[in-house]
Amino acid sequence: MEERYQRNIPALSEEECHLLRKKTVAVIGCGGLGGYALEMLSRIGVGTIRAVDGDVFEPSNLNRQLLSSPGQLGVSKAEAAAERIRNINPEVTVCAIPVFMDKHNCRELIHGCDVVMDALDSIESRRILSEACNQLGIPYIYGAIQGWVGQVCVILPGDRTMKQLYPEGTVMKDNSVLSFTPALCASVQVAQCIKLLTGRFTGTKGIFFFDLLNQEFETIPMDNDNQ
Amino acid sequence: MIEVRLYATLREGRGKIVMLEPEKAANAGAVLSHLGIPAEDVAILLINGFHRKPEDTVKDGDVLALFPPVGGG
Image (cartoon, rainbow over all chains, first blue to last red; front, side, top):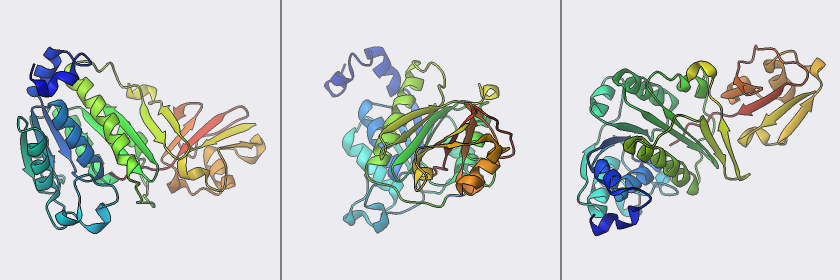
């Protein structure tokens, strides 16, 4: 095992580390959640990463987005992600895709991936992405944040979790996010991703909900007809 | 009594747990109205651990859990 991955062992076996090198993960969104997720996926040694985001950095990103800095304002988030990954781990094959995901390009963006990471920032785009994952049979790792709180859930093909998370008519009124919230949410997402990629995932336990203001961690059950 | 557990921003001005007399709310939507919570401010509504809708009935001894929408990234 290369020295780079020695501290993965024995939390991961050598075989699991080799397995990760053969896997492909798409991170849809390279902002708050995506920046942290890309960092962790590349350091642990996922072989191929697609970084998808059509946006560029702006000053309001600086309070929380790992890849942002004053010198990066106006720079493509996907391109910045790819540059960061190449610096962290040149063994990772990274593909920067500087486009906004929509219902027309979604399937093409995730085709052939082993897992898709949700690092989006709108309900409608999540509905589109989760449906595409469902159609293509790809596990989808939902993550969402707001203020002090976040939610994570593994959505497997056939699950109806998105309807439980966002019933019709759901409206977002608060777009604040504090610096630590995406870091925790992305960590939980990546842990779930690694379990899926290494065969350690033992089934969806529910929607993981955390509230860092009140230091509460809950598992919201899934509906029985979703399991 | 009906126990209402509030999460995240829904606690602001209301507290963590609110106990309601059952005659004050026949369904979950009436619970929300009683607490001054617009329906669109609740994304996940559980009654006794099961996902439910505002029109679903509530009764003495039920436990509601209300979570706001979380959608940023």
